[in-house]
Length: 490
Image (cartoon, rainbow, N blue to C red; front, side):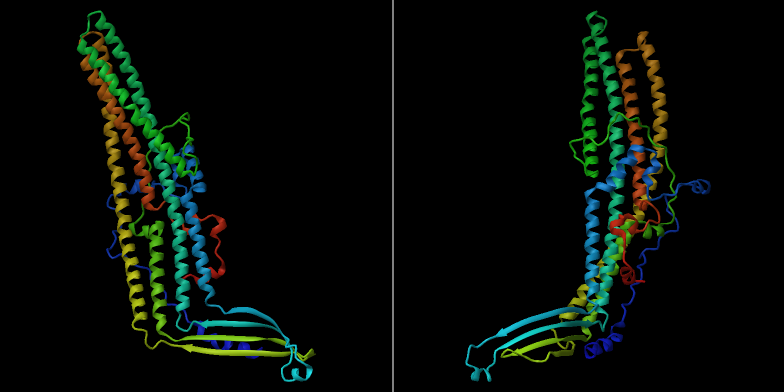
């Protein structure tokens, strides 16, 4: 058995080569020290909210928090992303196994009987053979190609884990978005429904006056038309409410035919939130999509090292050792040991450019992955800038709309009194009522947009700050063995 392990011991130092670490990419365009649209001053920035992994809880809506928590547990996109993590880690284990020797067991039994007379069997005996042994095979990683493939698979696993974090962020933000859209639709249904009922009542009063000869047919038709116009606004709002409920159900992994939330619970729009945005460069670690894009670039770069390693010689070690029992013409012979050890060296000389083509192809894939990362960085910064700008401008718009609505509501009170006193006609009153409706709907839509902008900002910032990719993976998949840790690039 010593001869079996001598070649193995001699080859171990040759397998100690490690892959060259892939440096983290740097943005091609220098990033600014702060976001241009970040408006808060020093005092506001000190009081700004620091986002955490449960950023949606900061809206102060228990119903929303329950919906997001349910979606994170039951959403099928997240479940699919978790399966991709499992597949990536299995691929990592498969690549790591190529660095280790393969050990197997072989056993055989053979019997041969000629049926010839005994004198003849002296030259052609009956035999029975029993063999039991172990065989070992190993490709010594002289050039580091196998290690590069293993480390590339490790980077793929990290990208898959970041994909889970990205899926969770996407699902949580989409649940929040659909929830606020649904709440806004319900609010606008109440506003338009109340105004439609009031307009129907107005039309009935005009009809009574028309019968008494105090109003014209024109006034009656105009009042009925206004009531019908309000009624016509209700179906689209009911559609929006129903569609939002269905989309919420799909996000929750529930039956779309059953509304996941009831409108009976009280609701008030959350207060505006000021979030500490940090520096643009911090997005490189905050956003799961950027971390995943970087991991994919690392994986492709390591596969480039694997491709270049094909130019180097390959060393193969194989060995067989075992025991054999042999019987000749029913005569048991003494048990014998057998063994076989072989070393093989293979090096490319001519392959018509196949290896170089593989290197060029992999180099192009690594360059493409780097360009995708560069583009993703710019898009991430743009999304934060746009979200901050939209949030600030929508806040100013909401203030103006609130002031406008207050003035119009006071005007409506004056118009109702003047119309009862006969100082203005019905058409003037209807104009004021329409302006109040438009103001209420505009303010409701602005409140919705403010919350959607807040959700988009959290999504653009990457959700919980400093949350690592594995934080988004349930415990049943988040555990990484010490071997995996050793496989991780520095």
